[in-house]
Structure formats: C-alpha cells, structure tokens
Length: 476
Image (cartoon, rainbow, N blue to C red):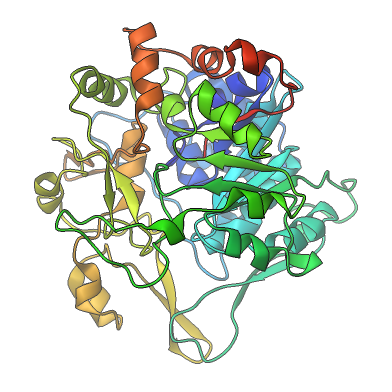
C-alpha cells in the first residue's frame, strides 16, 4: 500500500489480532529518515535502531537525520542517496537498517505474524531490504509488480548471511548486470547465527505465471497471492496488446482473469486479492481452495494506516457522498504498469493539479538503469523533466501522462518534500471495488480502525467456524 500507508503500526494491529500484518517495503530509507527529521514522535525510530545489530550504523543515521525539534515550517527534508547498481556503503546500510526498523516495530511486543511487501520493479532495493527485514525476523516476504523468480534463492542465501546477487534489467544492455549484497560488509562475519528463512509469497495475476514459477524448484515460491486488476496500486498490464479507453484506462478481458482451480493444482497455499474484501468473498475464496484473502483498501482507509488524517477524511467524505472515483491509469506509473489513481482535486491524481507541478525526479525509486556504454550505466525516469529523459536516450512519447509516484506517495503519508516553499501534493490510490468500504462506513460513520475492519471481515458465523490460520493478509 504505497509508501508506509501499510506501516509498522497498522501491521502490528493486524498481527496482534491473529492475522498476517504486512508492511510496505517501498522507499523505507526515505520514510525512516523523514520520520527522524520530523522529530521522531514517540521515539519509535530511535528505539528500533537501538536494536539494530550494528550500533555504529544506527548512530550515524540518528546523528545525520534526527531533529529533536522537528523541521521548521517550509523546510525541505534532507535527501537520501539515490538507488544505484553499486550503492555507497552508507546508502546500503541505510536501506538495510530502515527495513529492519519497520519490521522490528511491527513485531514488537507480540508473537503475531508480520510480512513485508517489496516491489520487483524497484530491483536495486530488493536485496538490502530483504536482508534488513530478515535481521528483524520477518515471517513472510511478498513480491509482485514483476516476475520474482530469483527470490527463493536470495532468501536462502541471505538466511545464511551469504553473498547474494540478483540480475537487474538494464535498458540496452550488451552484458549482464547484477546488484549484490555481501552481509559481511554490513555485519562482522560470524557475529550472528543463521536467520529464519521467511515464507515467500509471489504476487501474481495469472495461472500461466504460476506455471512458470513452479517449473523449476529454484524458482518455486512457498505460495501465491493471486491479485486481480481491480486491486489498488500497480496492476499487471492486460495480456496481449494493450488497448486503452478514451478515459485512459486499459481494457481487461477474460484472458486476464486467473484460473484459481489451476493455481490450486500446484498444491501451494494461495490468497486471493482484488475485490475479495467482504465476508462473502472470503468464503468464496476458501471454496476455491484459497488459504484466505489479501485486503488493502479498507485498511488504507482505517485510522491505523499511515495515510494522514486529512487525506483519509477527504476519501471518507467522498465515499459518504458517493463521489469517490478510482481510475486505472494506464500511463501514470513510470514502470509502464497500470496504476490505480484517485482523481481528486488538490492531489496529483487530478490532471490539472499535476500539470501545474514542476517535473522533478529526486527520490528516483522507479528510475530504470540504461547502458550508456558497455559497463557504464545511467538512470532515467519517464516522470523526470522531458528534456532530461530525452537527453538520456529516452523516447519523448514515453513521458506523456507519467506521474511522479515517489513524491506523491510520500506526500500521502504527510512527508511531502518542500521546494521553494511549495510542498508536494499527495497521490492517492485505492482498489476499484469499494463495496466493503461503503459497508464499514455505514457501520462506522466516523471512520473505523484496523480491528473493526477485521471484525467485519471475519465476523460472519460461517467464517468463525473456519481454522484461524491467516485468513486475511492486511496490506500490500
């Protein structure tokens, strides 16, 4: 769910209720250091960093970014280093420590299950983020927005503190490129016992992808999250040639519907996501053989999510007045994947608001590496200034309609960057199916928390007779 919408607090609430709470692994280095710059309310970041296995790393992070009084009004956030194929040691350590912090806090004080969701599209952050999460004892790893065939091997290697590498897609590559992490450069060799190897769930949208991943043992996950195109955030593009409506939305057809019966035949547990957020849908998923469902929207709208109170209230007001719209924008994401956008006035989901924004790519999580010459890489993003993108060899046509997801999602959680006195506007995302949200608002007109969302999901007599193991995964 965006960047820290499904944060440690929400995941903790869900895990303590007996379900699997999932933290977002997106941009965690920026999230953690911006919390520190905002004064670290509650002292949570510093408390978690005190438990990081390398005190020197925790100390420099706090010294560099912590502002006891918080930022002055209108003051910009200090940046973090942009992701690169070969990050400097402090960038690498910050990514490891930030993932550790988010998972450690989510697991603090209870024995419930916690997972982390990492975007395959942000390949340069995957290895250090997984290692940091594993140092904190993460129970599940969920990865989508791509084909996560290398993750099982990575988890095996990292659980033994071994050197781990992963091939990276590079535009125009004439050779193979990989990003890597040697845990011994982060933590002194031999100072830690082997780590628990988390359960890996591949987020997929089709049974052919399940077949591909299960073809070889080395690529087979421990289970699946089968996510339909009505889910929030990024969606898998339609199979075949993409057709786009006049409103800018991709056209999905029967080929884009996953065959759950075929997926069940692989014998791996699976959860269903995207318009499965009612008690009836949970029962339906169980009837297909699913272990349960993954739910995002009603938790994103809950008071326990990382969404700011102001942004959440705008969404709830629109929902109450039956004017809440969710668009599957074919062009918004720099990744080329469709992305769910709420086109609300005053947010970057509104085209007029976004056109008034000065294009800039400073967080740069969704940049794509490209080969400038053999062995030398550059980085570009279709959402950066058009002239910069073209100068780097990109096609001008690829910049049309692109939005800066990185800055918009950070603003959604109240951490929008400030430049020349102007603060970034939020970019809001939800799933298309608002049935469950409307029912919860009917029951709780002033809004609801995560426990109330779970009570709704699991409250029917039929579901109470089902086994208690992780019926619901909250977060994405």
